[in-house]
Image (cartoon, rainbow, N blue to C red; front, top):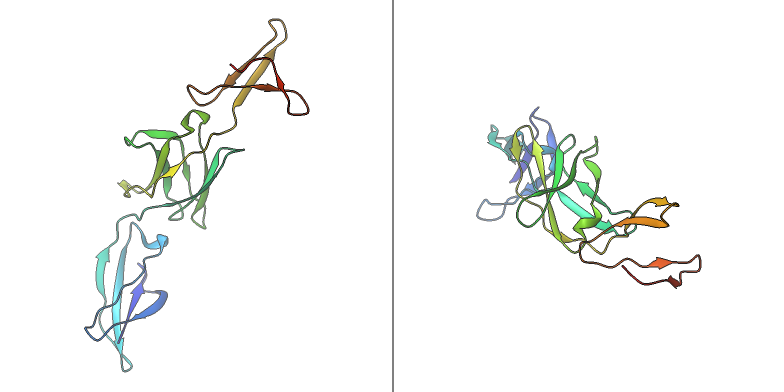
Length: 178
């Protein structure tokens, strides 16, 4: 026998899963069914059972690799869900993003988050998922303000406690790190 996942409209999602000699199997839930009621039917010898239904909570989103040049991270989850990065204490980091029709989006990580472990949660309706696996933010490139030609100064923002070094056009240090 097999088990087939059905979406909220009763249409099959993914491939049917074979049931073992104890009648058990595991269906891998795709992001698209998070936050919805779905059904599962059993099929055997050309017959199909009535659907058993279950409410699926929003699933954990997935974070990609963080680009240290841009400070952006790709996130994958349920299409239309809102995803928010959080630090290890659960405090929001950066701005949330709404995922596109393919369930993808990019989140800008503030340079001040360099070295921190961040996870993501996605919200479907008013229900928030469990946090994703954490990723550690690499040392992100600093953000440069405008040059104050009158004072001969350049405002630099980055990881608290880090130093910033001015480089010439060839990448050689100029002056002392601050």
